Image (tube, rainbow, N blue to C red; front, side, top):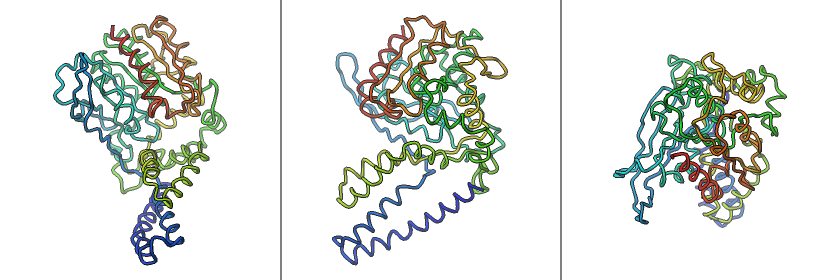
Length: 411
């Protein structure tokens, strides 16, 4: 029912937006300098920016500058190529068109979070990695648009895709997991190691993710523990309406995830809206663009498969199956202590309120067989959750650490 109510609300919003041209007519009729019409216009501009969007953004990465040996800088056009395709995810390559010496660049797979936002949330991450690496990303599909005939998607499905991707590169790959995927990445790497696969990733960088969500629990963790599983089933799961290809699928709707994201940092988002209102009144174009740059991406949300979502809540945030040695993949108990050949870097933000300090570092203890010289931990001071993979601190301080780690793992 909640999905149907959201669709009705979206229809009402669309009809409300049709009145925008009448608001513009009123503003023009009474003059743009009239105080009342200025506030009416500002209200219009704010209201149209607050609703959830199901439009999938584009990466919009056109070119990238590459410094070759001898400080020879060259600009390359970027093409997005689908390397592997499944109903649930595309493995996408960001090709530097015309670059011939790609073997001199390490292969990096950015494992994007599947937690309500599209992979484009990592646009800044991709841009920073591109000059020095061959970059690939997991481009997740919106489960709402996938026919139920394709089968369900759960944690095992997620891990299976990662195993396939590592095998596709024959192990010549560096995994960078941002937030949510740290558990499936560790699962896939462990599975290949404990089965003596010839294809094991060269390194894995785990960034601000719940390897052990029982450590230094934040509000997300406390909420998951406080609520019984049937609460999540009753309040977070809905059925996809007839109007979508994935009709009748059970999903956790993206708009519910967005409400959760906003409520976690309500004060900050409220202040952003107030600032936007004032920027519209002041005709502060730069301030408006700054708001749009962040929130156009932040509001773009996708649905999650109900089996995947519920398993994640139960196994990761309530039962802590991975650090407690209970997590299974295809019926086989996962043993991170089997990992020996894959180097490990853990990146955390000191002000991360989604995966607080220590939750990612827990990987060090369960990956106990990796040589100590190949295990590294980095804490970025004054960085929140999003600051560890985008923004100035990521670009100028965190990325060089990851780049150096990857280069050392190439040897």
